[in-house]
Length: 168
Image (cartoon, rainbow, N blue to C red):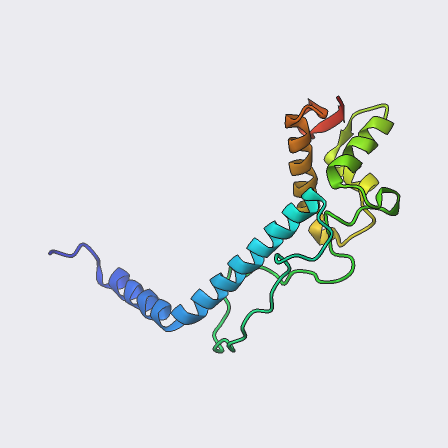
C-alpha cells in the first residue's frame, strides 16, 4: 500500500503512537476515575432532585488506589473539585426551605414573587453562599429543575436570554 505521509508527519505519528502506548495505563486509570466521579455526581444530583436525603449507594466510593506512574498530566485534566463546606449542593437549600425538595422550593419562591425571576435570582433566593467557581453547576441544576417543572405545567417560562420564570 503506497504511503501518502511525508517523513515529518510519519515521525510525528510514530512519536504520538509511542507516547500513547507508554501512557496507556495511566490514561485509562484517569478516564475511569473521572467517569466514576461523574456518575457519582449525576446520581447524587438525581437523589437531590428526588429529595432523597438518606445516604445511598450513590455516595462516592473510595477508589482502589493504584499509585499512578509519574507521568505528566494531560492538558485537559479538570481542576480538582472543591470539597469545602462552600461547595454547591443542590439539596442544601437555605434554612427556610428545610425539608423541601428543590422543585418545591422553586415553586414557593415563584409563587411569592410579583415578577418573573431568572435562574440567578432563583439561586440567590434558594441557596446560601457557595464557592463562586461552582456557579455553572448551580445554574445547570436550577435550569434542569425549572425545565422539569415547566414540562409538568407547574411554572412557565416567560423570557429567553436570560430565561425568566413565573408561577403557572
